[in-house]
Image (cartoon, rainbow, N blue to C red; front, side, top):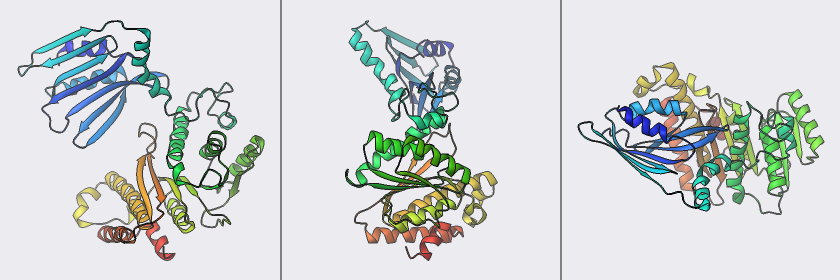
Length: 395
């Protein structure tokens, strides 16, 4: 790669960068790359979008990492790049014989108002996801070690803070699907653990959305339940309760509007999903974990090249587990999505199953989904726990 290309990229790789578009590829597998600046943990990073067929892959890179990526992108792969910067527009062209042409056009200073508008995308990127913004007086985030006494995110807790805000976004999205403003929402959080998200849901719905709620956190650890109950009492969260027990044994006198299950290990997720369907929960938010069940069952001669390798088989089994869970929920009359919870950079447990109960499910569509599940299970020689549980209950 011509060093002039690297030099011009690095010269404009700062917080004033608006966008870089790298195009004219002779590699059919990678059509285009876009780059923009973002702020992560108070540090400047460069988010790349690689367009490969119908898919887009993201990375957050340091300047040094981006410099190394340039070698791959411009090693006889791309022949054009356009850099849009607050201070200049730059075009990089590479001829068929490798000749490099760089055209730079400086921008006029502009008014202060225009400058502020140009800055907005980067500032917005930093703050747009924080439904519980830094600097707020949120007691549970302080007591659980996420915020300092001044309301700033503690070093080492940014991933947890990001996870909490991301989960609240999913809550925000499904609010129209839940009861009217005057009705109380009944929410069950199975496997609540230290209850970062349980407290966050309660705070967000009662303090920010002004909704009436009744939230119950279930966990098998007595010390966890004692501590969470103590904190809820200290905050005056009268409608937030913690109980020790298993979801399979839990009995609710009220309807369940929302079931939350975060990182319930292996088939514990299936028991939670089965109970949610049984109770007719309007919304299910589930982040599965440790999907080991099918790894020991799965067997299909036609897929032997995939299952021969332990690591690939394990990952395939986990994906098949969650895909079948989603399809089984579809068969039960839910509209289902599988969404990215947190970037893989922050946690490998990054898939969230979001299911919303349809008011008038299509019986034929439900039957087709059930048949698809049965056919796939038969082909792979498996019997998923959720399928077994739903069949036993006649659901």
